[in-house]
Length: 451
Image (cartoon, rainbow, N blue to C red; front, side):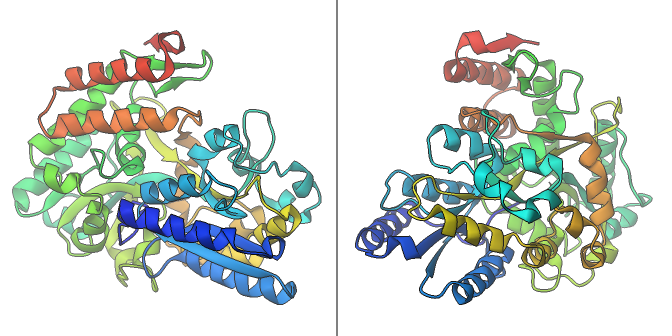
């Protein structure tokens, strides 16, 4: 799961913000000083490397300009909280910042992002970004407010050694949810001390719970996803919602996954990626296409044999119905603050970070799916990740989160439903009903339909 090795307590975040505000408020050369806020995930952070490289190049090319980097160590939720706090005041708002695609439209509505259309029209490298990736940076008015750094997909990552020890033939490709449960029960019987198949649940893992777990299930049911695009309404009363909760309940009730207490730990992903899979203690899990970035040389959990030990499978639809598999995609962007004192300079920093050479190295280091056509064709990109073809293939069956301004609240309500089910606080039907009530309270009854 995308995250970081160290959590920043709320008090420390507030103190950091206060210090940052004092510093910015006393700065007398704002127009020649750029403040860059981004997330730093662990000591070996590809994004931190990209920002450090860009700062060095940019200051060398622009004498008299100072770039102040402000990496935020913590989970995605910690970062988004820190960014939201900084954007509340012109004194603390960044010139350039790392922006999650699912927050882009709400942040545009709040007036935090500079519209980039005029700047992009004069950038000749913009034509190298693929059309689908460009959509991720657009808001409801059709304008572009951010430039994509990369995108991702979600797939099943399984340990071939664990499955083979249990007598399961590899390569393994489940064709339904029942096939996953059959594998997990077989591994459990053969290796009782292992974790056969785990999926995130609860509020601790935040967006990881929905992107790497619940939506993989929900979007593979007959009743589909969270939002009816044609009707522009949120979906309530979904049988697929109940079925998805029931699948998670089965995994946890039968002790096929990590324990509920472990699942509620925001850092459980580190146990999965850094300990259980490399230690041949887990059969499989669902994770992002970027998982190899943690195992490759220089990654947070270096594992030289991962290319030989790990296998990849698309996540199946509930009963094997068309299109047979499902995935979720997200991605992050770089954006320019609406209140920047020097938009031209800020945009130039952004394009320096996004040039072919810099973005190629970041894409490789972070095991991203390329968003530039000239990177997607580059031999260095194709040779760096042994799973690049597997994780790119599911782009054909991938889905994106509804990018509405109220999505974040709705996501939390979904996470709470999964937590209630795996901890025994509610049945799938009861948790789904509670979600439906929360949904109506968030968006209003007129924006909900029953499916």
